[in-house]
Length: 142
Image (cartoon, rainbow, N blue to C red; front, side, top):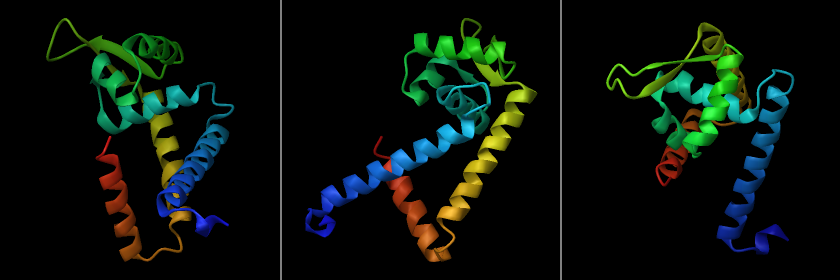
């Protein structure tokens, strides 16, 4: 029985189950859009942060700059991002969303917002604030 497990294991299993369900949901949303989930995550980060240097973007995604270069090449080919010289450092390159990429970000972000509303529909405002506090603290550990 689940309640016989130590609390840490119960939390661990709940986090894993949430991650798997969220990943499955994201895969279903991305299917048929002509981009990979990794590329969508790149679009999400650029949409939320604006233009970024390749190294900073790779760090945020948790991947190497070599892996990111391949992703960016595909996103450029799909007309979702462009590369431009950095406004702060002429030696560096920044990546930013095109209008088409901004539209994809807005659409995907709206789907995430809709999912969040559905998942928290039975929470009151106090519980939503608690959830936000917990998630903020958890995210701060990475």
